[in-house]
Image (tube, rainbow, N blue to C red; front, top):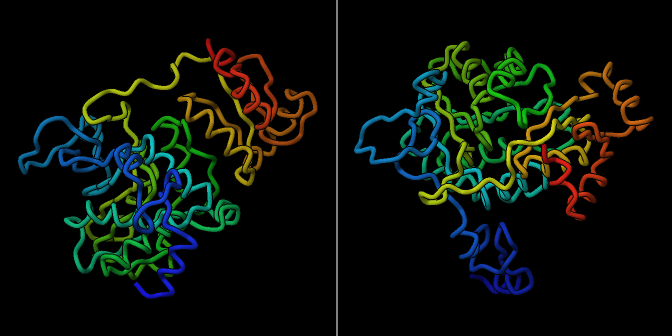
Length: 340
């Protein structure tokens, strides 16, 4: 380490990516956060990377979902289980402008995607619509794809795929609803089509829940005559979070009142409100008033004249906006209000 690097480390010591405690090196986790991070084990579904019980013993295993409805890609890998520290890191990268998380994320992903790569494999991110890109200023999947390509030496193409139309948030949507929303919305960039003909492709995204977004991307690649298509994500959402063999009790019961929220993709308060509800395991219906302007008069009427977003309704109660939702949470009144 040079004298300058030593001085810099003294002024700005390395911090844990999750809790900001001091650590030995940059882009790392402290011992506590590392111990609370669930890495995907060796026995997994070969397509969607969900953990499976038992020992693979070299055989190709598929989960029940992938046997019933095979994914339109060949193989899939995830580095982490989307829970606890992993969820915190994903949300910080996606919504918190923590772009530095992309590099360690790519390092973890590199450990699991090695067998899927060939020297010819082209790495490409799941695309963002320009409206979301304008709000967020970066595509978190593209940051990870770039970092992974630099680590592996593979070519990458940040704009191989494009979103042709804006879609509402897919949070808390069912697999069928996601597929309906995404149908026909992602396509190969005509200027990049020549780069994937008969060539292996590795698609990169931050989280896999139902796999609907990745499926739409994979189908677009196959339609453009790509070679084998594989996918990799930083984190895999599972129905029952794996806690080293133990089932973790959900923070909130699924038996809650109907929750409706009027939003806009350009509104940070909307994302914060949805994040709180999602962290409680609450399923909600979302109305994007930017994509559906004809629904805004309905929102204003229901909200008693309120014109800003979000406008949140729990059962027959008009909660108000994001600040009102968090005020209920701080006062311990949100859970009782949600209870059916």
